[in-house]
Image (tube, rainbow, N blue to C red):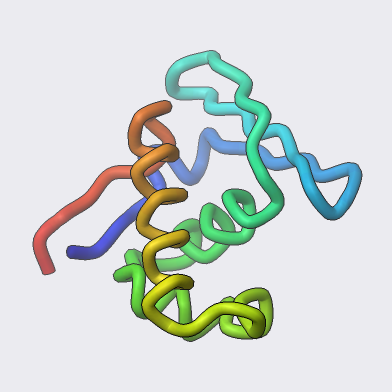
Length: 93
């Protein structure tokens, strides 16, 4: 399953430290406080649809303390949370 940013042209990010960031969705008018990892995932999805495995390949350095299975579980959880707040959507490859 590939994930995409719902409205890339209407989504803005602002990070002020290494742990948290704010994401504004112009499509919904909502602002969300998210983790730095969530913003990195959103930035990747801004350029192209990606599977969790593709996200892991790009962010492997951030997961050097985790095995691949645990890292993929974390990425899938982040994607699920982002889907819950309508920033991303999943599509069959």
